[in-house]
Image (cartoon, rainbow, N blue to C red; front, side):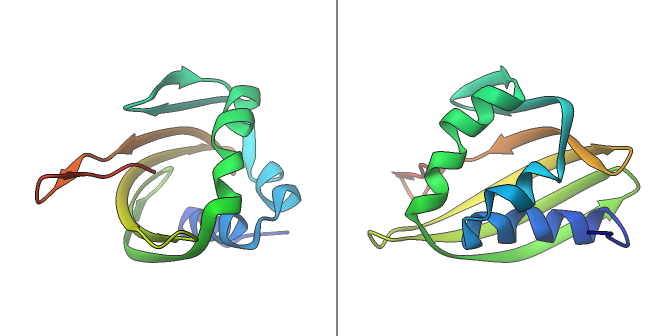
Length: 118
């Protein structure tokens, strides 16, 4: 699928998690790829799908609260409602290269003294 810009690509990535559409997200993530979070240190594409994609099955819904794109860089703040009820919020910094997601840095922590876990 053709996307107009990286903001549109970003929305499609998060929608793929909600839809549990692995084919859609496979087409949006490039190679090489790097994913970093408080639990992951620059993991590669294969490891990302092993560790992170499995979480798609736990998502009931997702809402993008803020998205700011500047060329190949995108900041996004989103909320996720999990199937077992808790809602959590993450902020991510994404870098695209040649129309494919090349790097993700995830930021999360405590809100009001409660640890937020993706």
